[in-house]
Length: 163
Image (cartoon, rainbow, N blue to C red; front, top):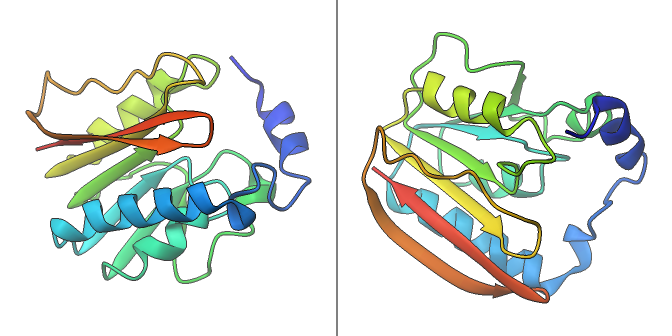
């Protein structure tokens, strides 16, 4: 599992993945935003928000976005309209989003636990096939109602909706 210190070092670059300059990422953000908007959530918990690339879009579709990000450096870049939190707390969120974080090199078990703690009506995950196995099966609590594969960089991303 990647130590938080390595994650902090990674985020010394303000856009380490090049999200702001890659057309595939703009498309990915739109696909995730539209999937979330379809369910008309009032509250969203985003897990692994990084520097807020997707958070910006989520703020356009709901009243309240809470973001969990382990890197303090990255969290400082999340738009101020979103609330940065350490855990879901005792809130019930309409939707939980885990995009690109449920992989073995991260603390995916903690992140899955946060998704479940949020007691969301809808869970949306989105993962890149070239990174590794995504631990994004929530069939113990929800039904998989939609699966959308789409071209992303050199591989494919798969968005899943659990309801």
